[in-house]
Image (tube, rainbow, N blue to C red; front, side, top):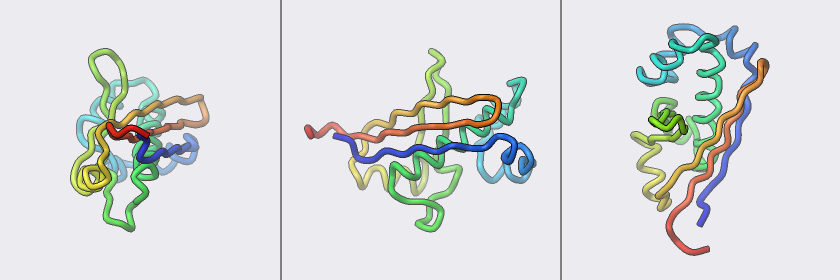
Length: 126
């Protein structure tokens, strides 16, 4: 059964203009920042990850004002190349309380925007 869905889009020009070492440290875990740094257009990768974090917040039905932190959602690349989410801290607690057993994420970007969609579900029959 679907517990929640979320979608978000990031304007890459605006995001790139605001991107700083301080923002990267606040929003992204070291592994996320390190992977993005290996990409030619790292801001596109980071923008997609930011969109995924926001989409995950929406799927959980909560945000920064409810105690979630950007680094509570980690966007990972599996060996297969697939993207997945790992939840930490308050996001993990909230997901557990809602019965979330799986998170699905899809990222896409153009030269001007990055977007993400997240679906969270549990094993219950709908």
